Length: 335
Image 1 (cartoon, rainbow, N blue to C red):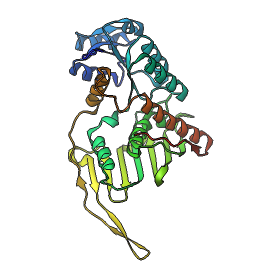
Image 2: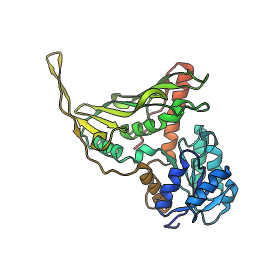
Image 3: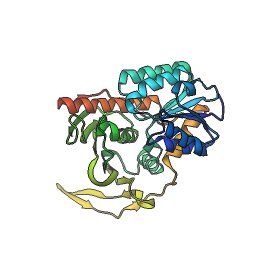
Image 4: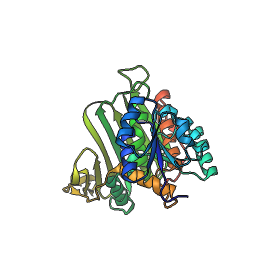
C-alpha cells in the first residue's frame, strides 16, 4: 500500500471543488471526472497537473489512481461505490453511503473482502469543536448524558428529489451516535411538505437510547436564518456547539446546576465558558483521515460500519415518518 496515494474525484458539482482543493493541497490529487465538459475544462485549467476524464470508466481504469472520492447524487452512490471497489480503488463517498441498509452491508463486505478502505463523508465528525465536545463528554465534564437536541436550519438549498431528513440529518445522527456511544432503541419522526408533494421540507426525529438518554433532530430548509446548533445536556453541565458562531463562541460549556430544596427544584445558573479547540478546516481533516486510512496508518471515524449505523437511523426515521408509528432498533454500542 502506498504512503502517497493518488485520489481521483468523481463529480465536480456543488461540493466536488472543495475536495479538489483539499486533495491538491495535501499533495494527493491525481485526477478528476465530470460529465459536463465546461466544468471539466474549468477544473483542468485550475489543476493542470491532474488528469481530466469525461468518463468514470477511464478514471477507474487508471492504474496511477489508487483511491476515489465520490461526490455524485445520493441515488447513484451505491452503484458508484460498487464499481469503484470492483476496480480495486479505495473509496471515500459523500453522505449517505447509499440509500439501502442491505446494499450498504453488501458494499462493506465487498470492501472488507478486497482489503479496501470504504469511508463516508460525515464531515462534522472531523470538526475540531465537535471533537473537543466529544472528548468533554467522554471525560465526564458534563456528567452522565441526559438529552441532546440538534437544529440544522436554513433558507435553502431546497431539493426536489431528496427530503430534508436525508439531506441534512446524517450529520446530526453521526454526531449524536458518537456522543452517546450507542444506537437508539426507539425512533419516532414527523415531517411536513410545503413546496413539493412527498418531499419533506421540515422533519423532526426523536430518538431514545439506553441509560435514559434522549435526543431530537430538527431540520428544515424553510427557516429565516441559518441555525446549526447542537446542545448537550448532562447531569453536571450543559454544552453548546454552535457551528454558525465564530471562534471561541463556537463551543461553550454552561456549568448550570439543579438542586433540590425538599421537593422544590432549585436552578443555579452559571456563566458560559468558551472551550478552546484547535481551529482547522473540517474537510481538510477529513481528507487527511482518508489518506491515512488508505496508507494503513489509522482507521477513520466515519468508516463503513459507522455509515451503516447512520443509515439504519435514517431508514428508521423515514419509516416512522411514513407510518406515524415508533420504530424499534436493537441496542448496539457504537464506540
